[in-house]
Amino acid sequence: MDNLGLIKAIYKIQKEIEDNEEFLSSLDNKIGDGDHGYNMKRGFDFAIKEIEDKKPNSIHQTLVLIGKTLISKVGGASGPLYGMAFTKGSQNLKNAIKLDYENLAIFLKDASVGIQLIGKAALGDKTMIDIWVPLAKDLKNKVDKKTLIDNLKKYKDNTRNLLALKGRASFLKERSIGTLDPGAVSSEIILKNLIEAL
Amino acid sequence: MKIILVSHSEQLGLSTKKYLLEMIPDLDKSIIELACGTFDSRIGTDFQKIIDIVEKNKKCNDFILICDLGSAILSAQAAQALTTKRLHISTGSFIEGAFACAIAIKSNASFEFAVQAAEEQISKI
Image (cartoon, rainbow over all chains, first blue to last red; front, side, top):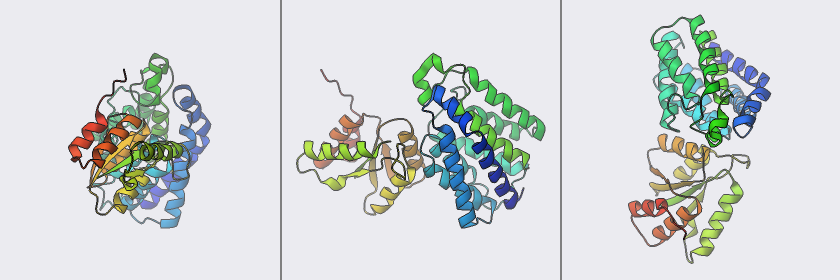
């Protein structure tokens, strides 16, 4: 996708987050503080507004703008985490004309490193890392688009029975088992739309 | 060097600063900066508040970040990753750590000493 295609994908993400706001918050109610849906909607509403105001005209500019917006306009943990994902994810795409398969693989790899730089979650801690890291690996292994999307769903579903070792959910210990990780669900929405736009 | 209090609550930040200034006579109030609450004063933390403090203090290159919990630490870590100045995120407690750290800074201690003070485990009995 070119920059316009990326921006269209961001609009789709914003809509899907909005449609799932209650669901995201209900998951977060069970194992968090109940505001994930609200936070993500706010973050992407602001991201859209910034895109419309500042009119970024390259893949890099758009990704950086999204990162910058999410990092401080989303009040919870998701802000810094998604903010770092987009900011670090964009760092090797300064001259990218298209966000094609190869560039998306670069984005995922750098974004995952960025997310793990803060928070320091490991695979299996029941966080967004359980989506971003395996997907980055799939892209590195040149898995086809359809399988990527199927795998995304699988990675998200796998978070259900994990014991939370990070975040508010970790305070619940065993009671965190049995609910999907809210960050994994919002990650699926974001990454699925980026893959579909390829 | 300066202390940046990073809390989800604007109120808690203001109260803590007031507490420190009252508990430590003649403490220079400019030592304590506040990055508390979201950009619109709700519960939460905002990485941009930390960055703004770091940039505003042109002559200061060393900051000790004292966070309440959870995403305050994430916002602090994000700021640490995206600035070139020295930001140390204290592993110590919010009130007691800030207190010990402020006393250290007031006594012109080194950065390392102030960090150690902030992170010292407090046993209360």
